[in-house]
Image 1: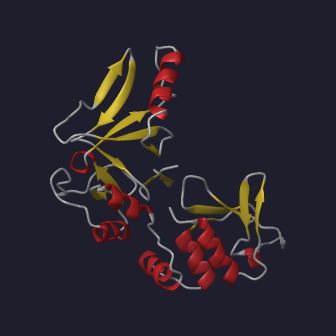
Image 2: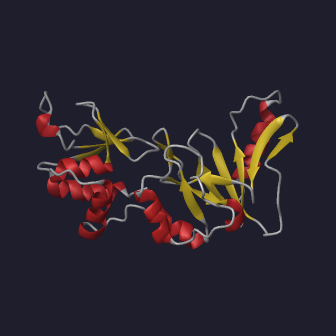
Length: 242
C-alpha cells in the first residue's frame, strides 16, 4: 500500500491551510472538498479507512480512493493509469511499493478476476512464469486482482482463523495461534480477518490442502494453491501485510 505520509506531503502543497492531526490514534486531515462543505470548518475531517486504500470524510460523508482524491485536487478527470503515471513521474510516489517486496522474495504473481479469487480464463498459473514486475503492473492497471502461485514461488501458506467455530476448547486454538505467532516468518492479514502464515519449503514437498487437527480445520496451500496479495481486494478490503 502507498505510504500515506507522501500523500499528505502532496496534499499539504496543494490544499490551502492544510491540516494533519492524530486524534486519539485516528489520523485526520483536511478534506480536498473542504471548501464545498455545507458547514465550513478549519478542523480536519478526512481519515484513511483501515485495511483499504480509501479515505472517508466525517463531515461531508464522501468515500474516495487515492485516484479520486488526485482528480479532485488537480481538478481533472484522469484515468487510474494516468493517475499512476502522475504519481510516479511527477511526485515520485510508487503506487505499488509492495511489488518490490514480492520481487525480492522471488514470488510468481498472476491475474485474478477483479474483486474475486477466481483466476482469469486461459491463465495457466501453475506452469506459466509471472515473475516480472512490469507484468504485474500491467495486470493491476488493467483492473485485475493479483495472487501468488505457491508452488512456483516455493512457499506454503497456513491459513488459520483463530475465531473459527470448533468443538475443541479455545485452549487448543490458543496453542496453535501461539505456535504460529512465535515463528519468524511472513504473516499476512487476509481480507476476511484471518491470518496467512507463509513458509519457504523444498520444491519436492507437497501437502494436502486441509488438515483436521482434533476437529479444528486448518487450510494449507502449496503446489496446487494460491493466495491474494495487496493491492488485490475483496469487497474493497485489501489482503495486506501488517
